[in-house]
Length: 422
Image 1: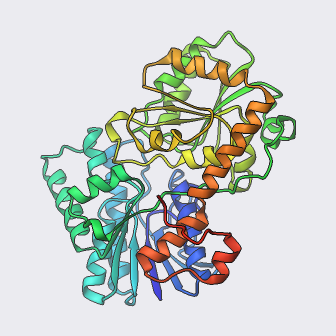
Image 2 (image 1 turned 45 degrees about the vertical axis):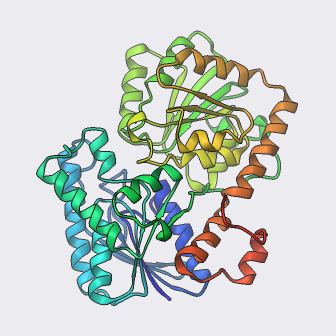
Image 3 (image 1 turned 180 degrees about the horizontal axis):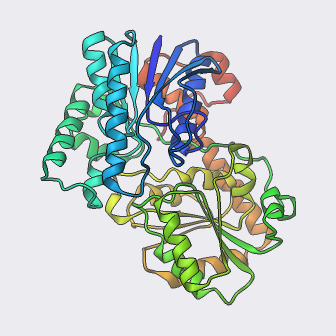
């Protein structure tokens, strides 16, 4: 089949969604499909960085369209970046050959509508893969007023997109409920969880082996890691307040890896409070990600109350694949708590419960080697059985493409006979 993917970011961008789309595209090529991608020419975080207008990577044809590069500092300029990308995407699609399937993701808003219109005029099956529920997420955090002209337009476009799509992919049951309220049909909606950007290691790394620890002179300190995009929708004040309270304990270090708007808040808080126990580092290359996430004592996952059911926190899968303990700060009812109920050494607390965060950190610090090994085995086994990329691809093939993966793929991935997620 001829398959076209639409998204603002793709290889070689380091943002998680770009890397996951690259994984999906590589899988589709391995199954014999002809895969093309239309994406943005600018980097997601570094808008000054530009990639080639066209290139081929592992059999994938990548077409990149231009847009403005004002960045994320002001919402109005961010919207302008999105609109110029949408305009150039529309021009590209106008002259692009017809496809059997067009898979639209959710960055930026309106991209799914272009995928639907393309299929209406040129044939093919329109599929929406909702990495988040926009414009609802923008409404919930006050970026856009629901009853404004722009709000009405985006809501109308989103509802129309879901109603006219042949299939909708969401990331959890909470998102599925919201998508159906906007027009998605239950029989044509699949839940496919994201996957980790690395496979679990068969053994738990000893801290002395870590490249990440050695490169940053962390020694044998207790590392509490928040990694990935510091999204504006996920407040970090509870974690930062915990760091402030623990500033006199030199054995504990809070490490923030990655970019995003809230990384500026972390920097400002660190400078204001003069906290030496907060360390900020740039995004880790994918080939070193497993080492970095596994080298810490705990991975922190944060979810904003306002976006529950609208945004899916995918960093939890990488955290789970490490086998290390997980600290989750967020709502009691969410896709993260659904998952962590079945995990070992997972700690949940609501926003503002700083003392609970500190208590969890000290419990994790005092775990015995046997406790760490046991929980690592359990968490890795759970991840591999439910959330591996191979399993997600198999579900996608079965439920969306309606073509089972090849026997060679199933055998090499060691998938069970029944691999549909529970």
